[in-house]
Amino acid sequence: MGEEPIKIGTKAAEDVVCSNCQKTVPGADVHSFRGKKGEDIYFCSACKQQIDAAFKQETENPNFVGAVVLGLVAGIVSGVVWYLVEVLTGYQVGYIALGAGYLVGLAVVWGSGKKRGSILQLISVAITLISVCGASYFSALYYINKYVSEEAAKQGKQLTSYIWVSPFNPDLLKVVISPIGILIWGLALYIAFRTPQARKL
Image (cartoon, rainbow, N blue to C red; front, side):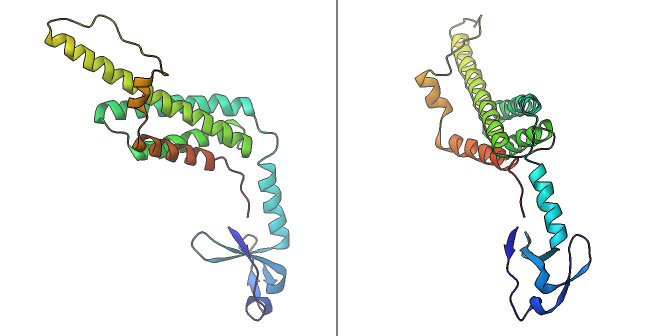
């Protein structure tokens, strides 16, 4: 929400109702905000101070260990879902990216003790990046092994061992990194960054 000054001659000369405590307050003594849907929201000074204090408390003394642990669990779950969807459909689905970023960000918030802040945002982004890159890497390995197995079958042979390729292999990177893939990764990272962001009026 963004604070909007009350214009003299409109609400400033009227009594308005505080959106939090529901008390009637002179218009000149309230803080006016624009809601997400464009509606006017008013807070008396006492309620605004309470809300500001609550938002500030959300950024104090986060449990970083809990944030990393729960974030990694969410990252693994997101990565597995991403991998399964990709190998089963052959596509990277944008909605999965949004879900992955949000799930990791939410897990970081909960793991930190329902805290928010810039360091938690960075943790969320880092875990999400590992998750989506890992899922794409294993997906590429799946298709490589599938191709090699099919080619071996055509020659009457059977693939006896799983083929592993370095994640830094240039040819593999060309397969994994694509314009649409970067866009989808960007969506995931953006949501992961925004979810633990510190809140303010």
